Amino acid sequence: MIRPHPTTRRPVAMLRRVAVTAIGLTLLAAGVTAAPATAAPGGKAATTGSFVDSTPVPGGFASWSELLRLQQRMNTAAARITNAAQRSANSGFAGIVADPTTRELQVYWKGAPPANLVATARATVATQVLPAAYSQRELVVAADRLRAAAGDKITTVGPRADGAGLLVGTQDGLLGATALAGVPVTVQTGVAAAPATRWDDSPPWWGGAAWRNTANGGGCSTGFGVFQGGVSRVLSAAHCANLNVLATDPTGQTIGIVGTRNTGTDTLLLAGSSGGRVFNNSTTAAGAVVSEFSNQVIGATASQVGNFVCTSGAYSGTRCSIQVKARNLCINVRDFATVCGQVQAENTTRTNAVGQGDSGGPVEIVNAANTLQVWATGTNTAIDDTNTAVACTGYVPTGRVCAWRMYYEDIFSGMAGVGASGVVLG
Image 1 (tube, helix red, strand yellow):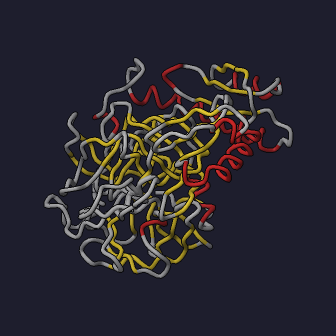
Image 2 (cartoon, one colour):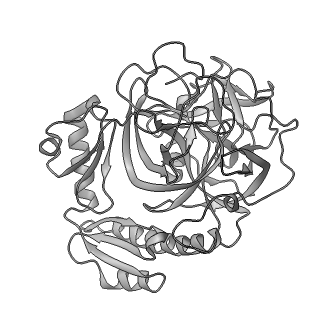
């Protein structure tokens, strides 16, 4: 993992910033000890706003609302198909691409899918069924086989959404990966994942604010508020702190101790009361903050391949135009853990998606019906700072690293990892 002010060699990046000396993804925690000069006193943003309106709309849509309405219909149909496929022991389901810019849901299936399932999807959104060489279940087995055989030589592995084989990330390439996996392998070389505030929040704690590890001074971001045993807690990234470490905001105000932690999903819970809102901001084309506000969380939803999401880390600020490229990945973060349930996403403008200090921060989908509201869809884990490093946005101390390719934990697997039952609603 990488500290915010690394004094030695530059490694792969986790969103917290701690040195990683071998092949691995970089986590996004940070060790910044001073708040940015622009930190607003009081922390709570009294106003609300739409942050997607300041970014260009892809795919020829007239507005983000138009794109998001189609994406929401796609995701509704995708969830029905995925849930039905998971209930069947012999399902040929391979994956789904829900890219609104294509104007149709693409469902990949090995063999013939149930006719009623396809008809139900088509009643919601234009749907195309495409053949797949392998089912998702077959590819998950192949991924486990490759991880066992290749070990630390791979940094990411998971099924392709089109069922054609596995998507594998390595730093230097992996000869014979197809033979080891037993299925075709698409290799992304030079991939290294590294862990990634609003600076003066107050209870109940909101997502996208800064928090500090009092044991080592590392800086991370708060995620969505969630419930554990009926009590509200603050979700964040496990690589940010160990159990029983006290978390504070940058002004020294106590948030709570790390009460639950799961390295396998890279999620933890801070024992402080949480609220159902997240910090966001609008930006100029260059990424400069125009205004800061907060937005209501209205629920949780899984993101599909092709979806557009936004991130809201305390260091980088709100970043949009980020498109999901793969789901269900396991990423190998050296000197930390193998983390599963990960989503790979890329900023389509090749500008910053997240960076160091954004670890644990929210990944959100804007509500199509009301762009002042968001759905919780994930928690920032890592960046690929080997091939995709770019200029940082937001707070930019010397040595901070950011990237246009990122990895985040799916909200449902992340909550399951720490025994959370649902998100706190605003």
